[in-house]
Image (tube, rainbow over all chains, first blue to last red):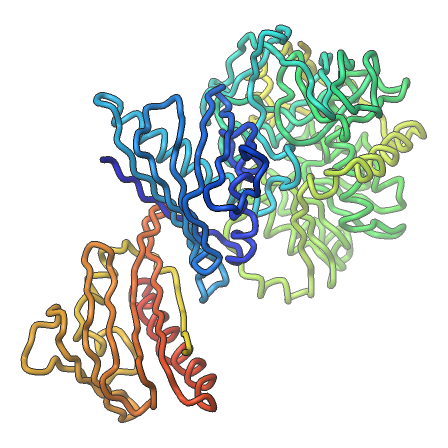
Amino acid sequence: MVEIRRSIVVDAPLAEVWALLRDFNGHDRWHPIVVSSAIDDNIDADQVGAVRSFQLADGGRIREQLLALSDVTSSFSYCILEAPAALRNYVAHVRFRPVTETNACLWEWSASFDPLPGERERLKRFVGQDVIAAGFRAVCAILAGEVNRTGPARKPAQPVSTASGFEATAIILTRYGGPEVLAAQNVLVAKPGAGEARIRQTAIGVNFIDIYCRRGSFDMVTPPGVLGMEAAGIIESVGPGVTNVAPGDRVGYACAPPGAYTSARILRTDLLVKLPDFLSDEAAASLLLKGMTAGFLLHDVYAVQPGDIVLVHAAAGGVGQLLCRWAKALGATVIGSASSQAKAEQARRLGCDHVIISSREDIAGAVSRLTDGRGVQVVYDAVGKDTFVASLSSLAPRGHLVSFGQASGDVGDYSIDKLAHRSVTLSRPNYSHYTDTSTKVKRQTERLFAALKSGILVAERPRSYALTEAGAAHRDLEGRETMGALVLIP
Amino acid sequence: MAKVYASIVITAPANAVWDVIRDFNALPKWTPFVAESRIEQNAASDKVGCIRNFRLRNGGRIRVRLLALSDYEMFCTYSILESPMGVENYLATLRLIPVTEGDHTFAEWSAEFDASPDREAALVEDIGRNVFAAGLGALKAKFSR
C-alpha cells in the first residue's frame, strides 16, 4: 500500500477555508484538474454516502463516495468507486485545524491506495503533485484573492477536444519556465455550453500578467494550459441562454480565465464587450486590459484631482502611457519615470510634465527637486522591487502609493512602520476585483471608450507578432525592450 | 466539561521539534513557567504510565501521568493527578503535525477538564494563554532564535 500525507498552512481563518472546501461537490470550483462535477441521484453533497461524479481536464472520469463528514473536526473522508487510473482501495482523508496564534489553519490531506505493479511511482506523483499539491496551490491562490472565486471563471483554461469541435491553433504552456516553454499546437474547440460563446479571435493582447502565469508566479494557469487574458474577435456561435451577444458580433474581453493565446476559444459571455466602430481589433486587444486598469487606478483606487502631482513609473510602458495621458487630462501635473533616454522622450511626447531617467537619477531626489520638497499625492508603481522604496520616499504627507505590478521582482518584506514617516497609505489592487462582473466591466469600458472617443487617450498602433511567435513577444516584453503594447495575430 | 486549545506554526522540521518535546521531563528546557521537573521512582521519561512531578515558577506543584506517547504520530497525552488549579478529569494532548509544504511544524496543545462552573471560564483563559499559548510560543522562539 502507498500512503501519501501532505499538509500546508493556509493563511485564512478555518471557518473561511472550511466553508469553501466542505462542499463535496464544489471541487470543480477550485481544483485545476476537475472540469465539472455532479452528485449522483440528486442528493445533497453533505449526505454521507453521496457519490460525486466528475470529469478531469484530460477527459478522464472519476466517481468518489463520501465516507465521513465532520463539522466538529472540520474533516471528511472519501473513497474512489471508479477511476481510469489504477487506484485500487483508494481512501483519502482531509482535515483542517486552526492555527490559533495567527488565525490561519492547517490543511492535512492524505491518501492511501494499492497501485498496480509498475504504476507505483507514476501514481504517487499523480496523487501527490497533480491532486494534492495542485489543490493546495489553487485554494491558496483563491483565498489570497489572486484568483476570482465565483463561477467557472476561476478554472485555468484547458485545451478541449471533442468530435463536435473545430480546429484552432493554441499556444500551450507546456510547463512553468522561460519563453521557450510556449509551444504551438492544434486543438479542437468544443461547442459552447450554456452562457458561453465560441469566439474566432483576430488579435490577442500580451500582458505582464501572462509572463507571471508562464513563470508560475501566479497559479492561474496549470500546465498544460493556455495563457492570455485579453483578445478581440468575432462571435462564431453561442450556447443556450445567451442573449447579450450573437454570432457575427465583434467583441473584445479582458478577463479571467486565461486562455486567450489561441485562434478560437470558448468563453462565458457576461464579460464580453461589443467593440465600438472607431476601435480596431488590434487596438482593442492591446488596450482593453491596460485601459480598464488605468481607468480604475485613476478613478477608483485613488481618484486623481485637478492640481494633484502624480508620479508614474515606467511611463513609456503599456499602462504607464495611458496613466500619463489620462492623469494629465484629469488636471494633474504628471512626473514620469523611464529606464532609458529613448523611453523618456516617448514619455515626454505623451504629455509628462517632467521625466526622470531612473537609470541615471535618484528618483526620490528628483521628485523632491521637482516638487520643491513637497512630494507627490499619488505614485503609480508597477515596477515593484526596484522602485518601491523610492516611491514611498516620493510621497507627500498623507500621499498614496498604488503598487499594481512587480516587473522588476517582488517587493519583499517591508515594515509598515515606515509608512508612518509621512502617514502614507498603500494599496495593492487586483484587476479582477474591479472587472469581474458585467456591471463592473460595463462601467470600466464605457469610461475607457469615452476617453478614446474624446481623444484623451489615443490608441497607439501596437507592435504585432504572429500567434506562433508568442515566445518572441514574451522575450521582448520581459527584456523591457518595448514601448507601448504588443499583440499576437492568429 | 471545558476545552482549551492553542496551536502554532514553527519554522523547523517536525523531527527537530519532536526531539525537544518528546522528553516528558524536559519542560524546564523549553517552557517559561516550569522551574524544575523530575520523573517519580526514577522511571524513564518515555515509559507510558510514568509520573512527572514538577514545580512552576510561581511555586505551584503539579503531578501528571503520561498516558500515551507516539513517535509515529508525534503526540503525548497526559492527565493531572494533583495540582493547585482545582481541575478534575484533566486530560491534555500535545501534538505535532509536519507541514510538508515548506517542511515546517504545526504544534497544537489541547485539554479537556471539569471545574466548578464559576471558575471554568477563568481556567480556560488562564491555561489557554499562560500555559498552552505561552509554551508553544516559547517552543517556536527556540527555533527561530
